[in-house]
Figure 1 (cartoon, rainbow, N blue to C red):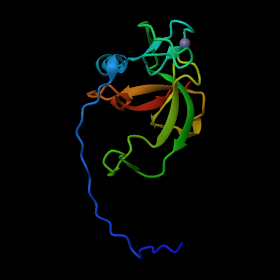
Figure 2 (figure 1 turned 45 degrees about the vertical axis):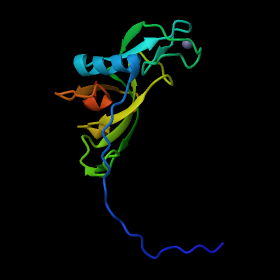
Figure 3 (figure 1 turned 30 degrees about the horizontal axis):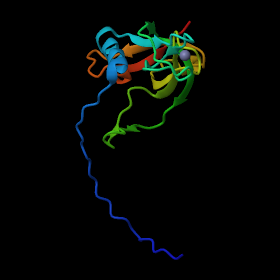
Figure 4 (figure 1 turned 90 degrees about the vertical axis):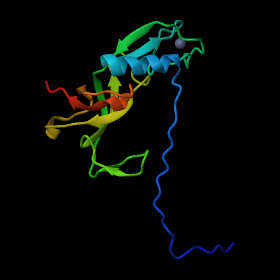
Length: 163
Ligand SMILES: [Zn+2]
């Protein structure tokens, strides 16, 4: 099939702003409230297998039973699982605009109290001494002074804890 490809595409920059409300549900709402108001990360526990569910959710993905309202605090510090140095500013996925990054590394964090493979998250990592950076080291969060959302975006970045 011979399909004609245009020589040049016309590019018309346009940002669509959609304002909407997101119903987090009772489990994620508690997570957001604890993070925003108390700088705490919380999870809930499966009543059958005792697995920590992070982020908290209504049912255990292993047992398929409704999760109990047994809440536990995890993190907010944790273990650095992976990191990558970033070489350029990022693109805000919501607006498409180029923005300066809050830190020069991206990383994957396993919060304290959550088993490997049962809940980790990506975040920024601010590094003063790159030569001391290694996987498995402890990291601690730096929260935004004014937390608005109650999501992980209210953490400015993580910093390595040098021993
Ligand atoms: Zn379970």
